[in-house]
Length: 293
Image (tube, rainbow, N blue to C red):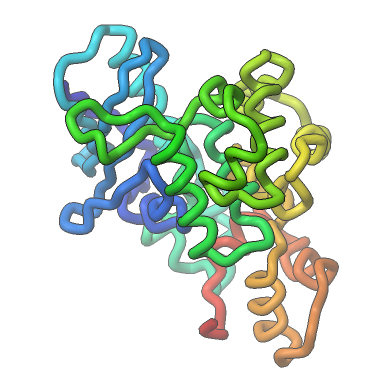
């Protein structure tokens, strides 16, 4: 099956793929030759499929091995549109960015979109697994979680989809610690999975909610394991850029950009981008830093 999906211009698939480290987390895989990607996902029908995404003149070309039902095809189209932000409009951000030399590159390179997983549940788990660890640790934990708990791809059983809330909810904290190496994050991931599986938490509903960003942030902060950095990161993935995801890297960059390498805190990072209003998180994300970490 092949389908072509339009993207709001300007668009660059490689810019989305390289927008952050998500492409290195299972079940994503980058196609370095074409600049595209592959994602293994489990559809509502229960089918596990590998979705191959490449750039086309109008947007992207999506291929799935084997035939899909009409409902499955529609779900794949919705998921790819969400994952790549094909319908996102950055014209207001670009208008501001043209006035800032440090962001003059974003429109020309079609930057702005940030790669997202098919579900906010997957993105939330992955975000929790970025906290208080190295990036190598995050990659390892996500890989273990997917390979041990995710359903296999029939055509290639070495690859798996990200486990559903129900699949993780059937486990226990000790298993998540020992098998997936999640450490102290295990009970957080388990409680999240059980809340979503039971219908007590509608994460997917956050994608289309008109709840004001500050209130949505409080709802995210109410999830155990989600602190200020994780909430800001998830808001970014939801297309809400009102907050900067402040971590050790942000502190280092801002320190060297404006404070001659002196130690700074959250307040200094937030102050540096305060003038960008609803776009402050995106301005931070794509800033052309003077310091090379």
